[in-house]
Length: 253
Image (cartoon, rainbow, N blue to C red; front, side, top):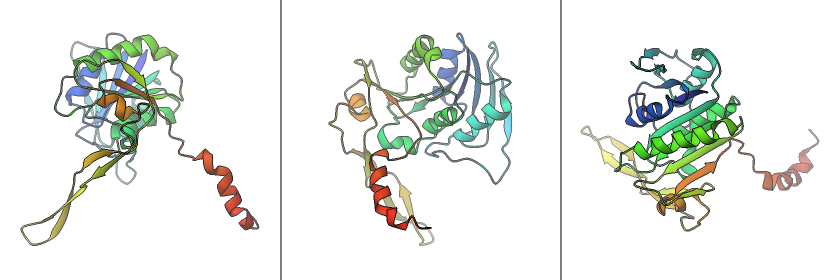
């Protein structure tokens, strides 16, 4: 099995090091990841400048790696189309430091790296340790190894699993839907030494449907591993007919 791994925390982040070590004894692992942190870049790609690539070595292993001065989506796209000698069987992004829950997946560079996989018909997994304070990736590494061993060959090109693992020992696994996560106190207004105004983005999460046991937010808050199938088709099928009826009088063009 051939696996392409990436992340948004940077190629030297502890999470991706744990991910590589967890998978390389059961697969041929290729690492293509940003040369520095690229969190919250979403699905941004680089089009107006060249991408610089530097080979990485992993002594004592058969793994191959490249550090890219681009976004997570750049990394997976470049890996699939230019760097890997053959297409991978699976893309795995992570292990992210911090959760990727609910609507935050739209901002996440790690989830976007995985989405780039399914755009190119390669099944993908995004995995996150849902804590910033608890930074032990050991259990997350064991979990992704077990999941890939048991289920990796069963995944097909349209499948993306977004996995969030709570800190500590999980209570179990829940298959979930994305929750609705918003933020309060998002911007702090400040003044620089020259009297100019600037804004610093921060904010605290407010989970609109945090009490819904079907959501990923609820599952992780209750100590469960959350596994959410995700796809990139943003079409709102429930209102297609409504929109058709709304604009039918304009169909004379």
